[in-house]
Length: 369
Image (cartoon, rainbow, N blue to C red):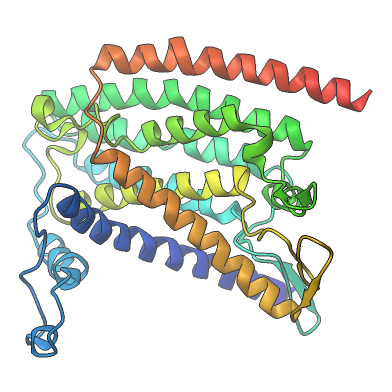
């Protein structure tokens, strides 16, 4: 029992470190990526003793983004405006980030691994009802954003918090409908079981990924997930041209950094959920536990540990691709108006989600009979 607890703790810590590091890298990627999109250089000033310049290497701004900017931000004054609720003002960033981080616990990043006498899946917490856990943990993330706006004693921050509450609750319905459709398709709430159901191929060459069975649910989940992360074109809670900086207008230093980290952690979470539900998770096409089964019946045998490693690598490649896609969309599309945002959610995504769920239920019942 003690060994099992230690292994579970190690898995949780490793997953947390991976997510936090990915979120930091996404910050760098967005700054340099947006610079490329807008035909500018981007962050490129800070360097360590000019080592890269001496070697003739370009300054990619890594020191700026991953070292200089964090040091600058965490050493700034922790300002709390007059009249603000000090306790809730400090609690809000934690309440925004914590639900996102705990959601990563149920996302499988690999297959089964055996170490000595212990066999476990590469997931921090393998719940049988993980899909419900995802919906529940995402749902409480709105409290941190709403409290951040309300506790700041600032009308613009309050408006941002109110906008965020309405937006996140509205788009959680579309996200929930998409997840329920996937659960109905595979008949399980376990994310690891859903990934395993996507293994193998159809017709000898077509991967059995969820995107083939649920393309509408994919579009719903990806769109609603971007709205949940409150980024362009869904950044109405921030909307700097209208609300200064929205719900975190009165935040500075480390607290502002936590809110920023929450945004990038949500980007990573959406990418992982899309990968898990619709693109096979850690599954690699034509790869089974004994090796690659190529079209035509040929078998390329490889050790099982190599199969597991390839699965983990495949999961992160898919995740990084969808992170990149979200950042690309963020710097491509214009912002919605607030009335357009709400109409898009309630009058388009929710009805399509309901119709997709009804069709899925009918098909599953007919296939079962």
